Amino acid sequence: MEKRIKTLYIVTIIAILTFLGMQVYWLYGRYEYSLREYEHHAETVIADVLVEYNKERDKKGVDKINTSYSLSHGVDSIGNASRKVTVSSSVFNGRKLLGINEERNLTDEEIERLSEIVTDSLLRIEEKKLSIDASTAPSDGIAWAAMRNFDLEVQSPFTIQGVDSLLKNKNINAEISLTITDSLMWKPIAYGHESLINPAFKIISPYSELERKAVIIECRIPTADIFREMSWTLVLAFVLSLFLILCLIWQISTIVKLSRLDKMRNSFITTMIHELKRPISTLKMCVSGLDNERMLDDKTVRKELLTESRKALDNLSAYFSKLRDITFNNVEQIPLNIQSVNLNDLFDTVAKATVQPSGKTVVIHNEIAPDMIVSADRAHLYNTLNNLVENAVKYSGTEVEINASATESVGFVELVVSDNGNGIPSGDLKHIFQRFYRGKASAGEHPGMGLGLAYVKLLVEAHGGDITVHSTEGKGTCFTIKLPQ
Image (tube, rainbow, N blue to C red; front, side, top):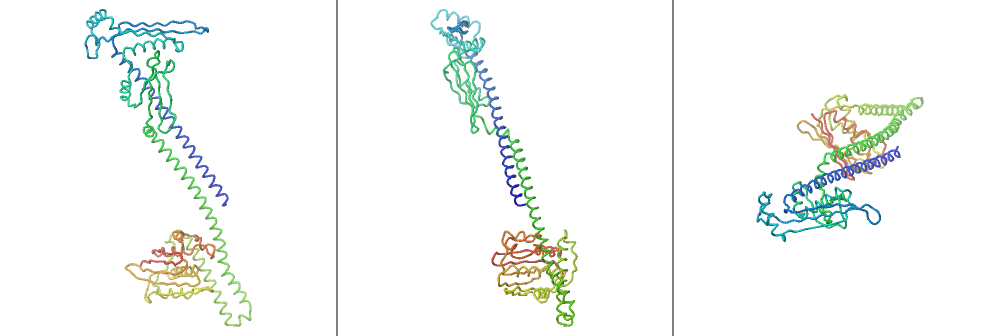
């Protein structure tokens, strides 16, 4: 059984660790999915912001007088299809020439006047022209868009501040920088997060493809927001994990308790057989003596045989009464014969009936007042005191002193039985009144079923009283019984 329990312990621990590993893996996947989802959403927002910023640049740009786009196809030296784009943009700052500071569209009159100024002052015209091989462009449409972006860059240069302000309006904080790429870039490139701690992603988006100009936008993912969104998932996973682990632990605890009960049952049966053998053996011996006529003729021997037979029968009767009482589930079920009992006389009877083992010196002090009277069941109270005294004698060294005293207060009598024996280990104190419990220090030294103190507590509670214990290992034990009057 112990091997099975150990195996079950190991299997349970492996199951718990496996389950926790699966939970951690699932939560990791959920967290990774949330990061990817945030990245996808942020990338969409950034793309929309760049489109919006280009529209603003187009509105605020300088006035242009002439722009020409050209796209031609051909074949390169090795026979592959090629594409060449040429863009020319002649621009001037019309508002500056007219002396207008406000950002607005020019009226027809202002445009006409501006044309005259430009005609008279051609030096004020700035012309930018670019011709480049665009064979790597995915399509003609993208090539045409690249030429328009070149023209837009000429009119209104791309700035970090312009993009940053729009991103902040969308609640996105990013580190923005401008760069020149090594080759022509036609589409934005996104780089996902590489670390789960302080995760960040990066987007490189071209804003003037033909000039190899691009903007780098690097964003840190707010993990606090991610965990906040996952809060219910985390709580549910934690509660479920805790519940399943507690169920497994409870299952193991139940199996261990059942195993202990099985051991206690076997020990109980063994001890019960041992306890019953002694009075039965005495009775068999006495019956054998009664069958001998010469022994019966001796009045002294006959009297001893009868006395021993009565004692054996009394022990059997007391033993079965104890077993009967200990099986009651409710203390109210125990029959009581309440009468006035002299505590001093009762304890004297217990002291005289106490067997002094060989090799031990037992001294019993009866400090109870001679006139101390209590209302109780004499037989049960006798059994209670007898159990306490027997335990004091059993669990002690070669010399033991037992003291009994009683005090009377309003509504109850307090009876104290103390000794200077071995004492009870602190780990056993909270269990000594449990049925079949035997402390580790005494389980192997003295025979017993672990019913004595449970029986004492049951009888005291049947009287409506209470019993407490104070003990110091190696110095002694003190039991205090309160009986209501």
